[in-house]
Length: 308
Figure 1 (cartoon, rainbow, N blue to C red):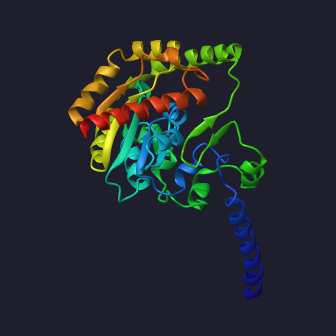
Figure 2 (figure 1 turned 135 degrees about the vertical axis):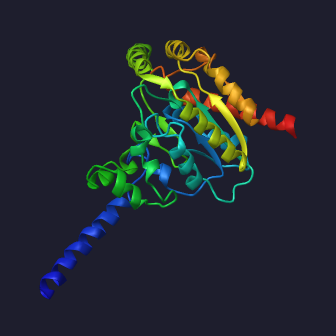
Figure 3 (figure 1 turned 60 degrees about the horizontal axis):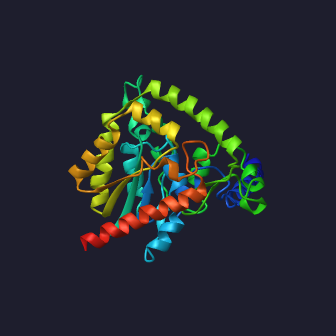
């Protein structure tokens, strides 16, 4: 028996060594979330869903605020809607010594909504998100994430690594999701039409959630102890905004009311659809995102200048 255990231990060690090696190749191609759980911990954070993850470019903010580094901690509508799980995650993500951070919370009606048929907190979509069970947010490589949330063979990590070319959905170290797609007018119209159908169906199954609005306020209250909070509404293209405005006609008023109550600024860009290009009607094209991010930075800089 001892001989058998001694022999099999070599196989176990070999398997572990291979996994450790494969995991070391994890990068921005691995999946859409992995790099959100690799360090270092930031003091300036962007929050939201996939609209925010693509539209706000930390590099642009870094250039505007020369003494700061920003991290985009926006995942997607399923995994990072505003809620207590997101709040606890940002507490783990944020550098513990942060005292003068800048926090940009991107909002839209969808990331403060829940399904009409949801009757219990156990049914919230984010319960299965990595945000719900991850402990380590600055490990690189992060084997906890890979063990818990990478469902494929780890040989794919090596096969799909960045050295072979960046994927069309590439997650930068600073959390920006760079999406590379063809934006010729014909393709754009097809994707916009598909997204309109999707969001019309989505609107019929969702409702604005008081739980999520309360959680948004809890997040604002927590982040105010660490710095300055700005709420930003990112536009989609005209067709998507029409659906949003029909779904929640007073959404911007609700958010403005929360901003006033909490003593923070609300930057509402929802009327500026015609100023940007959208890859599918909902998500801003990366070059438009850089322009949009610069506008946000200028608004924040102006606000800080007024208050100094």
